[in-house]
Image (cartoon, rainbow, N blue to C red; front, side, top):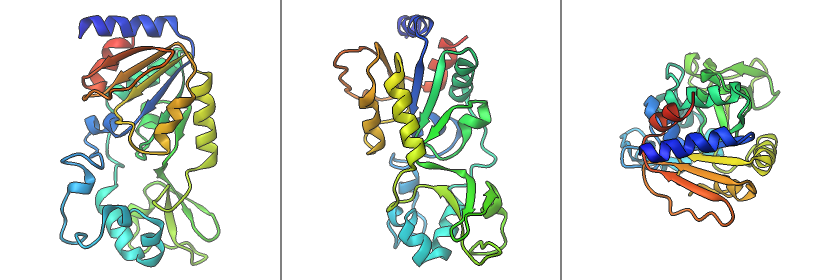
Length: 247
């Protein structure tokens, strides 16, 4: 792997507008389960929820038709308030601090990039770090739902206080998507990390890249074809790879 690390360092040194596009594999090294792997959230059998599909439990329909079920699942499975960033998050924050990284585009909803110090983060699936009233729009802190004693957390106006996460059946946030696409389009180097590029429409955004170099860091090969860009693929732990590549 030493040769590929050296090549990645060379790419970074010669680039000025790097964008990172990441998925669940970035956060698994912090202990956050992904969704679809053998040990992922969708395969954690729990008798309380076994009659529901995972997609339904994280859907708009469940939130508004069976809110007690939604919030029980949400509190049990998606509380990452005490989870700490890992080496990958910190390396990306350093790259941004150095003026090399212009944006992080993440499919994750855990807010770990911001915890590590990254500033320009486009959360295209939303985040558990923000909550708001579905009726009046009042904002609530990230731990509000997890600390609330109400089975269905409610605002003073009577509306349900919900997470600012894009649920199944909802549109992706326009501002985050527009920012992500613009950042990728303007980048001279794209790092794709910890994602299988199978979740759409998010995975399609990498197609807007028109720069010189694409780097893929993923435990398993993606079989990605780069038409006009120079491609470097490293199949190893993303935290280790980035911490060795970023000063």
